[in-house]
Length: 606
Image 1 (cartoon, helix red, strand yellow):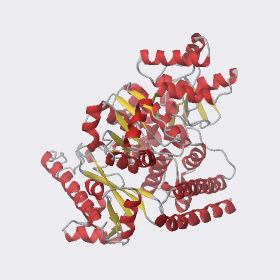
Image 2 (tube, one colour):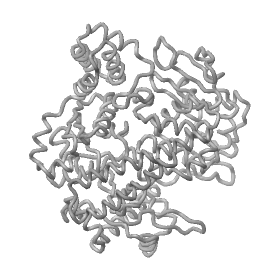
Image 3 (cartoon, rainbow, N blue to C red):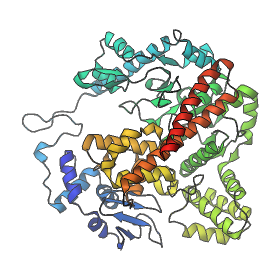
């Protein structure tokens, strides 16, 4: 079938469909408080981990990570597409789908006779994409040309050790500290405001006007694999600028989970050397590139995702994760290794000294010293085993906990030979009989703590790749339990304040959905093709928050999240002050004072 239906029809079906009854046709559910529990229909298990929340209309398996709403469940069980699932549930619930008002597959209006018009000429679609690319190209040139006229921007690039040639090659730029300079420039080239807004370069205002999204920021153009600019990342130059980093919103050209910074430049180097270096930040990548290391790419202002992993697999069978040497960097490397595990890539983790990132290491020791470090990168399996064992006390309980934390990674390994080797190593390092390890592997298909994120109950195995902290999880659960509190949350907390990238993504989806619908019905639709986000939302929504005064709980979480953010910023600035050039010290001290005041205010309010 090839029909689309409007949102009203979908919501009517969603509201009438009893997810417990639908799931109950396939799963024997038992009541557990406000939720229902049963054996998962998507994987074999002996202990029930499949949870349904009838009030929220969601399900989630804490063993395999499958989750969603009633439409997703029917799609998975019946092997049909969304339209077929919708029609099946509509017939069951007695909702008449307005077929006479349907739209054609491509979304154009029906003709006067009720028949869909012919689909648009592919050349028209290509022309529309080219127009957006041209606008981004103009914007990149605009930002680049503004660097020379701003001493602060020039000073920033020099302080980071970037040569003029590098700035030019990557078209690094500066967004003026003005409300409409870019908009005026582009409109002067006959580009309508609607298109500037569509590109994410401007924020719309009433009456059809708009203002520049990026102001007083150094600009990093983000490119597709062909090297065409599709979005921007801007870093604030003033201490009080919030957020410190700001990316373009997603658009027809840009999906943030699918962009690796610099990969368009690294493709040849990756193919030549046979492996790709994955780093965290733009400056890590640029410093390596400038030093002649040409097979690196950076996660583009977001957490490493399954989409990134699939892109890497297109170009290489080996990946070396080179994240910061601090605790957060090691945890990020662990999460990335877990995400890469199902793709059967050879993954290694290169650890730098605790105070270093690739940027600082190369500037101090040089590119050759960095290259000499690469062969010392340890296979991800060895790294993960040794790290968790080193944190264990060696007692039977400590060994048991280490096994529990490593089982999600073991289950993620798709190659049986690789998985068997991993379990062999685990048994040897723990000094256990392999039969004990295999027994745990075969039985542990329920919830496991996540590698690098313990003790958070949100883990890559159960959420499809994402992992978030306990504080962020509690905050998001409150909003999913009482959507009306989204209004309060928005007043005091922007998505960028959340230091956890996965939580920031979910919070943005919640805010967008509430703004459009006045509630969170259809939240899974807003995830689009982001399956990891959908699974994480289902896991959070399936277990609501129980609190007598949930609004007070929300306020407390907001203050804790703000404090966490400003505490992290204070630590960042203190680290920058250690080796900063003399001319930057005043600016950094100003930022430190500002963040310190905000942190103190958060402590007092709490």
